[in-house]
Image (cartoon, rainbow, N blue to C red; front, side, top):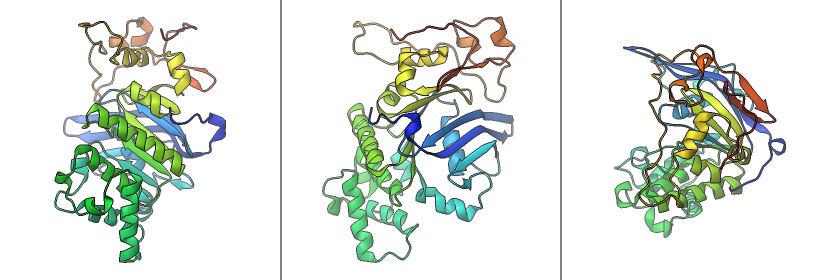
Length: 337
């Protein structure tokens, strides 16, 4: 893990309380996020973990104000960055905050980059968006400096290349350089290694961790992989069916997983000590339909600990210190074997 910040050693710069996001679609209303709550401290790294469709990316885009106004309905008790209410901020303010204060790295670098622009020009454009008066010479120096910061060799030569002339890992480094152009306070990395091979994934994640520490940024790492979150976050929130279902410091979560869904995610991670020929585990069953979430616990149909009340009544929130989880199961002691 890159850092060992304690909850008391950081100041919250982002507050999200009871966030809801619905989409009005022709087939009906889709409940993508149903009451997510978390905070992010300065210099802290928060992992948001869950399967596809759990609401992770929609939560990130709601923070950035990037959801389609025609179909998305966003509401929250609190959605605040510093002194800015992100729900009510005018678009001119959001344009300044996006990239300038809160930056985002997307899953697919090839889609995030313009295929007919040189990568150096794209990084320059990201800088100029927030510093339009910057001179050409200083701008060029800044572009090369950013490429150096994300460990692209021969930066002076690479700035003249087009995206298709770079490897997937190099393209993702360009996207990271663009995200860092205005030295943001928060970096949201949305599945930043999805399209990369395992070796390059590790390099990119290590790079993000190093940059976060060097620049003192808060980082939200969105991932489906608890193993990735284990090494690159201070805290983890596990999401299922649009809700946070367990939250703890990373160390506490792996010491004592309480919510059965969290344990199921952990058990599905491939392990090097598995006997040859053994089958990989997966989370059994199918995620719930977000247009028709069931009463009670959304994980009930996939949970081996489910009892009758799980199907009728929402589970209570149990808490020990800063570790909380939503579950009817009241076993007091569980340990990761």
